[in-house]
Each structure stands twice: as structure tokens, then as C-alpha cells.
Image (cartoon, rainbow, N blue to C red; front, side, top):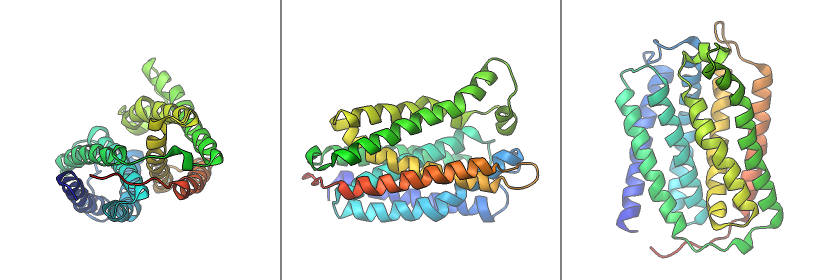
Length: 271
């Protein structure tokens, strides 16, 4: 194990400790979201729940897999780190400053640099695209493109209305801080479509980023389900249709992600 890997796994360990602290505080401690609207506070607790009960165990498991040098572990590790970049970028930029603000910034920063290091490990691996079945390539590409188009379709209307001077419900719920919408429209949606197209073309970067994006998008859909469920109280009503849609999307993402990872047989390179 080289110095780059030691730094990567050290950063991952720090993420686990800090994220466990702030997520547990958000769910069980004194309310750090008291300055937020009911909808924003519910969404924050949904993110906390997914991070604490899914994201952190997944990060720990994928890190151990990566340490043992499996390409599946390296890709999954990079994917869950990409989710943490998104999550704590949303916390730092989207919520009113609270006592954990600097911790959010630190988590955003170290998640970003850990992701870059994890991506470097994947790029250094020996990649043989011929082992991927044509069916899984086309299915994964189709799912990624649909995710990108779906995100764009869901957000562009309300965001356009808000930018044109209107006051859609999304502005009321987020108090005008469209952080998630900015990240989704600016990064997640175009990245999903571009990687899907590259995967269809059997491009090397498509093969690298498709598993990473599938893990990241799967975690994000889990967060969306948890956020919607957390909003099921007076003042922040949950939408049954949204819950069903997110749940079905999560099932599809899970099945295709497992199928994709089963088909991966790349060999890790020499560090």
C-alpha cells in the first residue's frame, strides 16, 4: 500500500468519524436545524438518517474492499465518496449557518479530495472492457440517461419559474436556497447523460464513471426517499406519489447496479 492509499483511507476514516457525529447530532441531539423551515429541517434529517444508517456502513465496507485491491471495492468506494461530496456540499451551502457549519465544510473538502484519490486508483487499474456483457452495458447506459433526463425534467420547471421572478412551492420550502437543484441541474443530470452516452460507445471514461455514478445515484435516491418520509408531518406534508416514484427508482438502480458490479472483472493495477 502506497502513501496515496494511506492518505485516502485515512481521509475515509476521518469522514466516518465526523459524519457519524454530525448525523447523530442532527437526528438525536439538540436540534441544529431550528432556523430552517419545516420542510428543510425534515430533508436534513432524512439525509442524516441515510448517512448514519446506510452511507457510513457502506463507506466502511467499500473501503475495506478497496484496501484488499478489488476493482469492485475501488469503484464502490469512489462512488460513495462522490455521494458524500454531494451531501456535505448541500449541507454547507443549503442550510442556515449552525454550530456544525465548519464540520460540514471540512467533510465536503475531505470527501472531495478523497474522491479524487479514489478515482486515481481506479484509473491506475487495468481495465478490460471486453468482460462487460452487452446487455448490462446498454441497460446501465439507459438507466443513467433516464436518471439525467428525469432530474432535468423534475427541476427545470420550478427553477425556471423561480428565476423568472415567480414564487413556486420549491422556493417557499427551501427559503430561496436552491442548492440541491443547482447541483442536480449543473452536475448530476449532465454527468449521468454524458456517462451513459460514453458507456454506450464503450469509451474508457464511461466504463470508469458508470459504476461510480450508479452507486452515487443509488445513495441519492435513498436520501430522497428518507427526506420525503421525514416530511410526513403537519407543516411539511409528504407526497405518496413521490415516495412511490423514488422507491421504484431505487429498486431499479439497485438491481442494475448489482448486475453491473457482478459483471466487473477488471484487475487492479500495480501501485
